[in-house]
Structure formats: structure tokens, C-alpha cells
Length: 274
Length: 274
Image: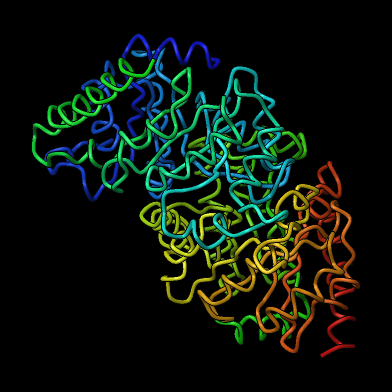
């Protein structure tokens, strides 16, 4: 899936919503906990209730990994379900991996070959040869952390680096040279929407993956205002606000209602701006 | 295990060797490939052949993850084998994780609660609240990436940050305040041994995990010269040079010979300096 195909999906669905699959065994509805594969059951119903409103699903790998093999199995089932039933939807492995070359190659194998995801998030701290192995998979996307939505982004990302620019700017400027707008995106947190002006100066054409709308407090209109480009260029993620909208047997309907409301706002923005 | 207990192990074994368990399905001896759990079989024999020479084992999570549930199962078997037979040896999950707080909490659960490792490597890019959840596990170690052994370290880690110091210095200075020398270590690559002088100015008392000796070309005497402190303060990792010393049925004996040679050098260094 290249950038043009992604933009086609956005126009068709009038949505740039990504649903984050942070399936948490302690937060899913009680009645699901009897299932052998409770996280997968939860995900399956969330996905079946939102597939026409979202252009991407983003399983957060930590939430599966913490259950060991049982968690990995449910991650595999979840991805297989999306692949089989909704083949046009992008699957983003939110993994934030990155290591020396031969190890990053293994992580790229994990998410692109074994799990058949379309995209994976990577941490830039170890530099070019830690990111390059991900970029070598044709048709896949590498999503580099630039400016994250959490408080801790102030510790290093917002600090001045070489030539007095801040580290996240250096990361954008340097790492955007490693790939193209057809195989690379950047994570920019919605909680720092005003920074999108600076981000767009450096990477006008790349898609941005924007977490932090919903439970983390980011504002969709602001994000669109500062971050949208001519091909939309945004994938906005919402996880907890959708997944845990309701804790009863009607959790999937409630999730759909929240997703539909967000997609409604996105439709309005897209109609106005594109 | 606190720093004093770790130092006791080092004195007892006259070794500060960590064996990296980068078990690669494409590199293990052919005769092992018939085993259902070939990576575990490989690890088990490497561990049984080196346990008295090493103070730590460091499974590299990517090498298991790339096989999905089958890989995770073999990672679990490997850790269980060490825990059951060699309870004094430190187990370091080389995972390089790091995410927003609620997600880092899940990763900490994965490696400390589910897998029962003693330590985990984390990436600092997302700042304090991405590292803090790891530090909240009593008796466990958080090992923060500072200056890595790969070429890509030049891209960001070696660049000037606030007040003109380089990013790895800022990371050391800032993140060392989040924990103590009893629950935090730093990764500093052996391929940049001369930088250890600067590292020791900032963190004189912390243990350092040093990868890059062996296949990556780092020099043990140099590392000890620049990096050792009064309680040794070094854990030096070797992976490929030990694991793949020989590709035949005597791979474990060959691994032991290389490990013994490295431990012999360490013994000499320890006897001279401490």
C-alpha cells in the first residue's frame, strides 16, 4: 500500500481514523473473560463493529506480549481476522522497536513477514542502521517516533540538538532522508498539535501517525488545522476512548458510536479542506 | 539482586561475562534443526556449557519474537531452564522497549512478572514516564541505552544537545536521576571504548552493560581500562563469537572454549585492578 492508495481509502471512507487495539485483560467486559482467547474475542467484536469507519487498526504489542505465548497467539488471531475479512485496512504494529542491524532485521521479519502487518513503529535513538532493515521490505511502512504525546517527550525530544534545533526536528530532518513519503511516516502526538507547524516545515509530504486524541486529551480540529496536507497526510489514532466506551455486553455498539462520532468530525474536516 | 550482590558474583566467578543468547534459526548447527524446539535445545546446551564462566545471560528478544508464539515459547523455556538450574545468574531481556506510561507498564510486566527476568534494556527516546514503570519493580534492573555500538549512534547520540553536550551525555545525566546504581544500568558500546571516560565522569557508580566485544570488534582491555570502577561496574556481553564458534555437533564445547578464553582475560584484569 503506497501513499496514493492510502489516500484513496481515506477519500472512500471519509475517515483518517486508526483504532488502537490496546486490548487489556483487566479492562475488557467481564462477560468476555470466560473465553479461552478473551483478548481476541474482544478485538474481533471491536473490529467487526468499526471496520467501515476506520482506515487502520493498530495493535499495541505490549498488551499481547505481557501474556507471553497466549498473548502472541491472540495477536496472530486478531491480525488474521483483519486480513481475512477486511483486506483493505492497514495494520500498524505499534511496537516501537529498534536495535543494531542484524537484530532490527529480525524485528522487521516479525512484523512484516511473520505477522503480515503493513507498518511498524520504530524508535530512532540508535540511528540509521537500526531503521534501515525495516525500510527494505517493499510495500511496507516504517513509522519513526518523532515527537510523542507523553510528558517525557520534554526530556530529550524537545531539547536542542546540533545547530540549536530540537532533537525531534533533527530526527525528522535526518531520518526523512532514509526513506520516502511512500514507505515512511512519523509519530507526532496530538497533545502537541501546535508543533505540527514545525513538523510540516520539515516533512510536508509524509503521512503522520497522530496518537493522543481521546483519552490523552488531544484535539482533532487543531491537529487537522496544523497538520493536514494535500493528500490528508494524517492517520489519527484513538484507543481507549473507543475500546472502553462501555464495559457491558453492548461494548461493541458503544465503541461504534464513539468511532462514528470521530469519523463524523473527520468527514466534515475532509469535506471542508480537500 | 542489588549491585553488591552482583559484585559478589563477579568476584566469585572471576568473570564479568554476559553471554548473549541471539539464537538464530538460520545459524544453529544443522543436527539441531530436527528438534521441535531447536532454539531452546541450542540455548540449553550453550547455557549448560558456560554457566560457570558467565554472570549473566542476555536473550535477544527479536530472535524469538520473529518466530511468533513458537519463538516466545522457546524464550520461556530458556528462561525457565536458567532459573531452575542456575538461580544465581542474572537474566537480561534485551528488548529495547519504551512507550507511554500505561504501555511501558505492560512491557515491564512482560519481562519482570511474566518472564521473571532480572533486567531489561529500554530505549530513552520517550523520556522519564516511559522508563519509570520499569523502575517500579523492586529488585529488578532497568538498563537504559546511552551510547550504542552501531554506526547509527553517530546520527543522534553523538550530536550536541542542550548546553552543547552530546545527546548520550544528556541521556546519562538526566536518566541517572530517575533511578539509583542499585536499579539502573546503562548500555555503552565497546566499539566506542574511549567514550567510557566521559561516561564515567557522569555515572561513576553505575554498572554498564557493554555489547560489541567479539563479532562487533570491541576490545576488552580497553573497555576495562576506561570503564571499570571499584566494584567492577562492567558487564561485558559476547553473543555471536561464543554461540557460533563452531557449527558442528561440538558447538557447545567450542562455545565453552571461547567463553573460557574471554573469562580468562577477565580474571587477569580483575586480579590486576581490584
